Image 1 (cartoon, rainbow, N blue to C red):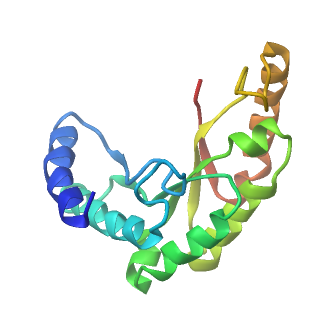
Image 2: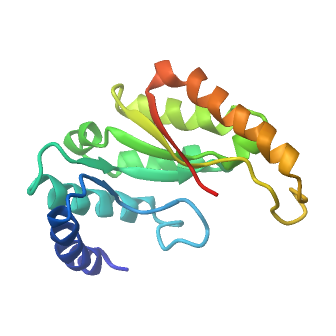
Image 3: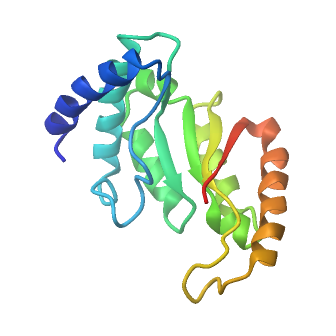
Length: 178
């Protein structure tokens, strides 16, 4: 959608959910994934963040806005650089919460992209906090991960280890997606 269409939708969505007691809002899920309209346009994702931030913070100063929710995949660092460069210094400070979908790192027993996402965010805002907003052990996913509950169980341990490892780097929450 265009920024104007996004603004129009958020002008209805945010008040509706605030009235229900919602205090945490995300801008766009997996903004850097090829299936998303923000994939080739991190500047659009940055514009969406500014719209969401204004909509939420005008109604609730203590509510949280996940500025950027990214998937751990090649190119995430370039995507994030473009996103942050599209923000003014004021909005870079306001982009203090980043969501990480780190299925790849968790299931491949690595830290590559989780570490990269944290470093990239911290390069633009030293006080950024992180939530693993989608993570977990994958039971079955195409040819990469044939069905194995045992493997998935072991990867869940890895998920918790990653959260613990990066706790001092600002990881605060973990949401298992199944």
